[in-house]
Length: 138
Image (cartoon, rainbow, N blue to C red; front, top):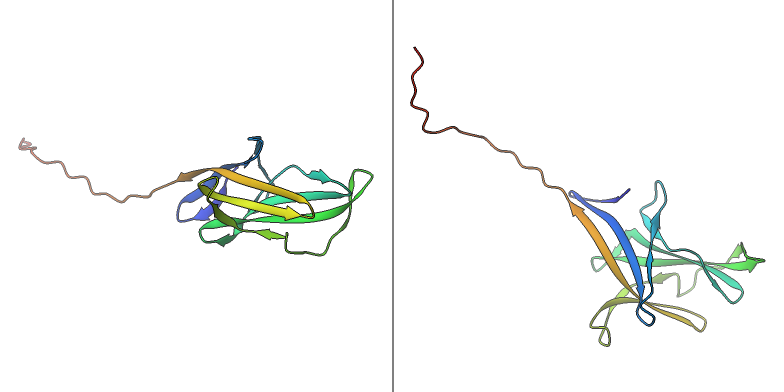
């Protein structure tokens, strides 16, 4: 499944790369969503759901959205009211010499690069002309 971006362009896949550890995580899609989702992150007393939102583009890059829930014995409890961590924009990082997401919640700081794969379809109209056919039909 891919996410249609219009003009014949689609997102085929996206992988988040932890800039510190090098760990790569392939994100997944949900039917009817314009997002790619990360597996939930269990952090202290919280469960963090990260997703790359193709419906919210800033400076040609999708926003990294976060929803954070109270951890109720390993399950999602009440969702926290959105804070500054809810939207993370890609920014140029001199150390990495590329654009990355710097996600922060409490003392959790994630530096995430993204590997993205796209497809592009092109429509072409053409008229084919056969030249040099000088044979005469009798």
